[in-house]
Image (tube, rainbow, N blue to C red; front, side):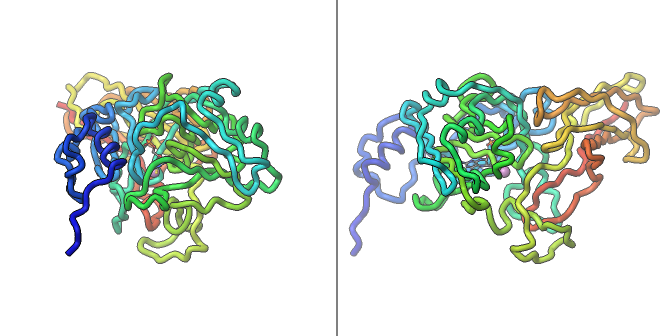
Length: 406
Ligand SMILES: Nc1nc2c(c(=O)[nH]1)N[C@H]1C(S)=C(S)[C@@H](COP(=O)(O)O)O[C@H]1N2
Ligand SMILES: [Mo]
């Protein structure tokens, strides 16, 4: 007969800290029994999110915005999507946090405390667009597995921190440096401490850009726990999976980083377009780098009704990975004719750009407002789902909203 097992002391302490109370009689808690108090916590209260946010998964937590929630030029925490591959770490003691630089192409192994990062290096602030590579996946056909993001896995917050370049120069690296790989404090869903949920990063060229940050603030405050407190990498314009949260180690690699979710179908797409459903050889898959041009109508909310005769002001944001958005057009006749929107310059490189317009409708009835952005190299958003790929990445099809004129 197997002896009954009980939950260990350190696990009890961490369960207790999640509950915010000591578990009296915890030493009698059988292993494998989940505590009622820990089930179905209210994610909106837990993460300080607006109740209009949409939860896609609770293990791990994944949550997206709706288009109309993303109207602010700088996305506040309450409307910022959450994408986790593993379990959010418990809130750490910031005075004990260390970021270690190592790797084959590092001149030395060097660790920095948060204090070091804040004191030794000049802070920089940028607004940076972060879009999940899988944003728009829900439209894929044949369907792609993974979180069924609609349009809301994108944000443009203001990030403050140290330039990754300054940090790499301080630690020193050799000429054979190829890639920066991040390692973080979140835990694998299996509970196996030897497995990382995700360990990605960026090539040296991206790492050395002015806007690539090791950030300790979001929107002027400590980064919220779900978004990487106390330290995260932010590489705007790239799939947000490159922007590691809760980072503890950055490895200067002498090869393309080969951490968790860098290989196979993860965050990679066929290098050349393929027919839907095609089996693609591993060697024909390429890592996603700059994200494609895209736009979102953030006002009005889809389904809005307005009286005939009044003109409708509308607006949204457009972004184009590493590039600038050159123009945004709109259509109210299902794409037969297009008119120019006005378009603002970005607050800085890699920040999304505000577009707006005003439209009159010829008669009562149902309409759709479509927006289509074009990047500085002349590439425009497709009207329908672009190139199929096994994991449903990079859907940058035009955004549409429904309107009723009465
Ligand atoms: N350590 C760690 N970093 C991570 C992830 C993660 O699961 N663990 N998810 C990545 C992915 S896939 C995305 S889209 C972004 C999401 O960032 P956000 O939750 O702050 O919006 O974080 C990236 N960084
Ligand atoms: Mo992602």
